[in-house]
Length: 215
Image 1: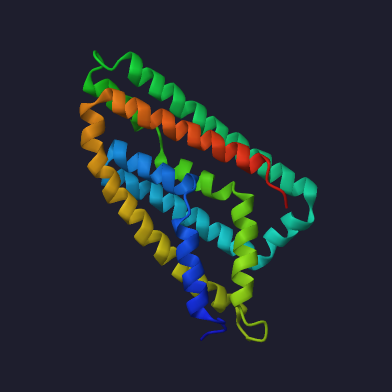
Image 2: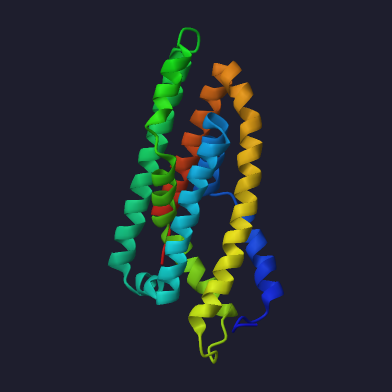
């Protein structure tokens, strides 16, 4: 179908890939839990746009260039790890602020802390600075594209559309699940601080894992 080989196998693998936890899904969940459905989908839009860029670069062979060039791969890798570390530190600082002001912080101050977060931009950058994802898209997508098909770009579009659909369904589930946590977070500042610090620790773990990745 349109130059795609063994679509059922691709879909089965795609489900497993999407369900694997990562910084994108964790960030969308945290935004939805703290700011609601609209902000959650704003962050999700950043993920989808970032994934689209990665898929386009993969189809163009840029990821293969990263795999072949250790210096270029290292630059992208450490830039991504640095950005994830910056996000982790920001989350931990926010958690500390929540803990210190858990009894006296007014609601309008709490909202002011998050209004400048810009979830779309953050999610977009997190998606872009993920060299392991770039390499994976190439290694995975290429297996399901017929090299003899006259329009390989169309094959990548079909595969990418299925990937985005799976991501939409998964992130939507996280967003609506996250909003259910929002009420508990607002009522219990200690719970909110603990969850935010835990997310920061996970992001720091993602940064360490990324910095140790190899081409």
